[in-house]
Amino acid sequence: MNDTIPQLAAFDEPSLDAAFATLAEEVCQTSATLNDVEAFRLQWLGRKQGRLKLVSDAWLKSAPAEARKPLGIRFNQLKQQIEAALEAPAVAAGPKAAAIDFTLPGTTHTPGIQHPLLKTMHEIVAVFHQLGYSTNLGPQVESDFYNFEALNFPPNHPARDTQDTLVIAEQQSRPSRDRLLMRTHTSPVQIRSMIAQEPPLRLVIPGKVHRNDAADATHSPIFHQVEGLCVDTNITFSDLKGTLDHAMKALFGASVKTRFFPSFFPFTEPSADVQISCIFCSGKGCRKCKHSGWIELLGCGMVDPAVFAAVDERRVELGKQPAYQADRITGFAFGMGVERIAMIQHGISDIGHFYSGDMRFLEQFA
Image (cartoon, rainbow, N blue to C red; front, side, top):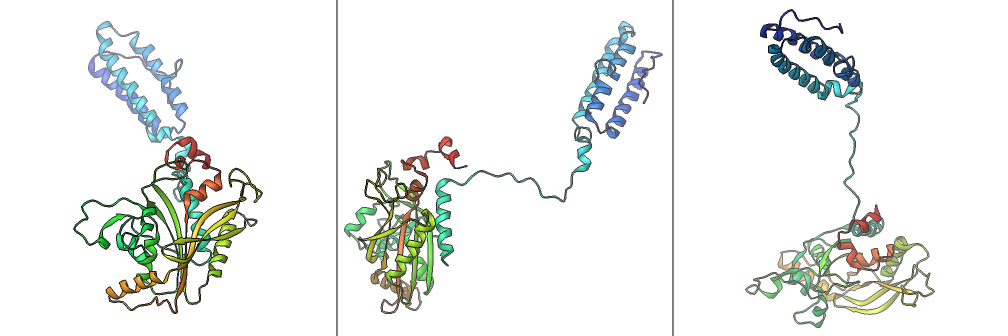
């Protein structure tokens, strides 16, 4: 392309239109054939030898006064056309445009990291998946029957006071067993699963639960649980102890020890609290374990025959055959708080950090 700018023979409108049309065509041709965006910019907008500079020197300076305004308008239009060409994909992409392989996988944009509670919950569930357990889920809004009655919490039973919860409004006209509330544990999913399926069952049940607890460093009105249920013939307390001992070692390390203390839960008999040897002091005694060498972690027990009776009663109401006769079917259940385990794993002293939304706290787990 000739870098010289021919002198204008005349400065009337038709002559200006023809001259700038020729330059505009040159811009189009250059943008279509020149892949180097910087070379294109220098060729047209270079301060010393750019073609616009040459046009200005050859035409604007020698134009008569009456022709400078129409010539200046066309000059600015040509400059805008060049700047638009610089932003066009054909020029701006440069030689890389032809090198893109559209058959390759696209760039993956990671949305972020798992919340530490979800991460811990998935770790717990994965341990029981390796033992052959499957996952079941259920609604957070439950009926009194599934949350309390079927789990051997009769109306007005004192054990209900420890699981005070939010009750859905305008339920007074319903029978008490059908009134809706926010579930206080994931145990209702155990009842729903047994009603829907015959034994054997091996289930792990993660989820969010609600209780009317005052928020402090170790309590929250909303928290997460992972519960387990195993029902079959000849299931014993020894099976329960072996299962939980394996799970605690998988979560906290092979050196962790477990011990069981008698306890009370309406839906299990016998019931037990499970403690693990302190992972911070290896059982020697420290402030974290209150110098006892042990940390209380979860509750468990053998499924109470009254629970099996309630399940079979409901199955009969739904037109199904009884399948959980206590004389031939036994099982165990356990439940643990996800927040408590996450706090022990990561050395967190205040449960409120999980719900604060403070990015400085959450970024520690990235």
